[in-house]
Length: 220
Image (cartoon, rainbow, N blue to C red; front, side, top):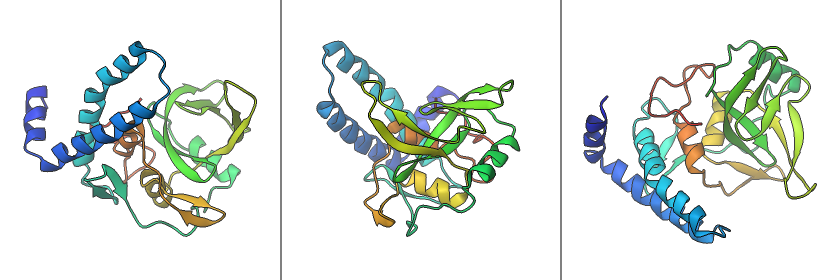
């Protein structure tokens, strides 16, 4: 698809325009509340917003195989929430067996539990020699490092425990819809970032071991 045809298709989609408006409103609000100390930092964020917002809005309108419902007004995915975090088959050994049986690909979308919710990340580096891979946001994972506690760069205060998850339909739906739990009870869903929304559009719902076929949904 050429860029000209892409823009023409977008203009014909009422959902695309509404998604862009919702994403702009959300991102500008976050930018206004962000702790950015220089005008240069704010300018860089503003310059990149149009590209990522248009890319995300377009990708969300192209999802025909997703089990999620698109909430256009809030630029989010919705789905029925499980009473508890989906932990079936998430034992450490079972999780690593799944990844070892998979021909890992750069950009593959993977789920990671962070405290009370499951987030989406992607593989950005593969080390065949040491049998490990790195996720974009959470670092290296190997057979002995599936569950860990991260520390902030500013201090040694521990953050919530993170654990690599094996993707399945319930897990990926929960991550895409921002589901979270507190003390084994359902809590208010969180709003996904632009990057998480784009990753949600890169999921291959027919085969979690493969990338989505769409060239407009790849996130880094």
